[in-house]
Length: 429
Image 1 (cartoon, rainbow, N blue to C red):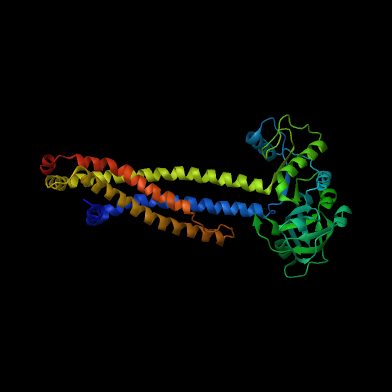
Image 2: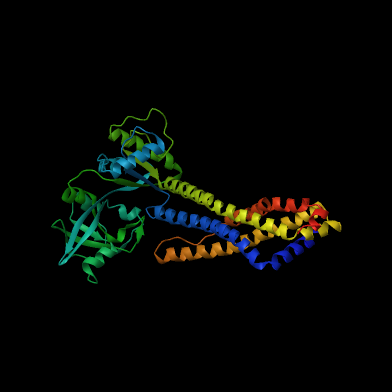
């Protein structure tokens, strides 16, 4: 029997029992649709996270942030450091001197420091709780933020502890509404700050709404408001991105010398640095690679869970094929009696199983793509840069799963049918 005749007979058998075929296909549809959704969601999450990371700067940015020293290495030490910071352990050794020393490196273009606080900000009768972001004058040249009206503060104003402020777009609306804030005075801890600029709307980044911030010179925030000398992080822009790793290592050497930390006994090749370091130096490129690894691991985990539903669907196919073989035992005996061979019967039922799974795969792909599109539209509605994407590998994996389960779960019932003896099959009740 040729393949065309085999497919025709299998299709007629499936068409004769539409409800049963539909229910069998449904199991595969759900599983394959889940595969498509997982891959699409993985791409969406990856795009979202990478977009958020890139919003802090391009591939030419190296970040230095505080870290609690740990005796453990690698990710274990980083986890311990994160837990310590979460429980209130403070690191106060990162300073503006560190930023200035790093600025002297030949491959560094410029850099800025950052520290955050939260205070009551008032104007007239308006009183709002706001995040204060103390930073350097070069922030506006490195960061993605842009001035809407007015100007950013200068390096001279920072060094002279000038009481000036720049408002995020939302904070401007909260305090001034439609009025022009430039030249007006707001109060922070009962100290007057002159508004000199307003930033363009930027939106939330990593759940942090920068439009709701009040930006002030870092030294002003340190001395006039918080009474501290340290900063939380540094951002540096390099001239040559090909020298990112070498520059990052030079930065670590400067910070260890400034903080009286001995150099590591052996070379450190990870972004976590030495366990004794009270800082972490990482480029945006490295951050994005870490994020890709994390989202990739999550996608694999979800696919492992989805595989369970595919196995359940496959077991359903096996059960249905057993029922079909039992119902058509006399037909099998008759066909064998008139000359059908083992391979003919085998391929007839195996083809039927494969057709069921392929049909489920095609419908599942369409359904999964549709649900993925709805998810992306929902994310976009809430302001998330999700992006609709169904990677090619998801189609390959889905169709691959369909063929595999069609053969794997249809093979045994097909063999059982092919092994039936003609006399026994014809006498079956």
